[in-house]
Amino acid sequence: MLYNVYCDETCHLEHDGINVMVLGAVWCPQNKLKEINQRIREIKERNGVSPKMELKWTKISPAKIYLYQDIVNYYFDDDDLHFRGVIIPDKSKLDHARFHQTHDDWYYKMYFDMLKVIFNPRDKYEVYIDIKDTNSYRKAQKLKEVCSNSMYDFSHTVIQRLQPIRSEEVQIMQLVDILIGAVGYENRIFPDGFEKSAAKKRTIDLMKKRSGYTMTKTTLLREEKLNLLVWDARGAE
Image 1 (cartoon, rainbow, N blue to C red):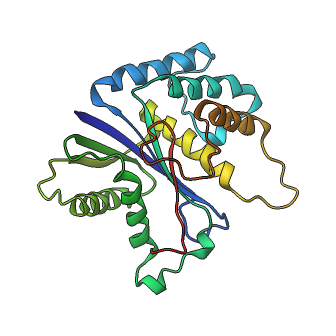
Image 2 (cartoon, helix red, strand yellow):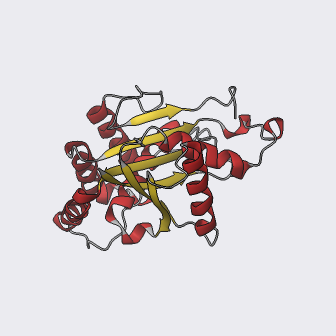
């Protein structure tokens, strides 16, 4: 089977003042991709917005709550869609010097920890990451090298492609942004007096209800709908 895997991250900078970092991926059979993208466009139109409008976690508001709830419900209703996320709950505990590595080195290791649960050596995968900056292409090539070597996939028969794309141009990539945004928001420590978004909280509550998980703890490894790993910095980096 050939699968498409769409990856993104939130709060990935080492010193951004935010405690949590989340890496996430949504994957589906490639032959279902057209249908999935069409369904997402239809949900947008049904909620009175342009199919070209980019869905993002940061855009969730009371006026758009039903649109985002429809998207979340669609994700949980479609058996072809799966999500895997890795939560780093406290970046202040990272000690890269102790492990003789840079933050970038560790970043690629975390990406592989996320992806390795998705990959099956009997299947094939095309992996896409969201373009962040001019370094995205270099990061994509480095990530492909790290993942392929870690899997002994030196001939690149399992990971057939790994390239950056623009999230606003791919409907399913927007779904990744919403899911990792929700996981990050639920695990974030906010300053005293900070007023959380009611619309975002309702979206998170819906995800908890549909998944049966708190979104703050590691799930079973075989979980395919909302598969989460809470990474412990006290272990090895």
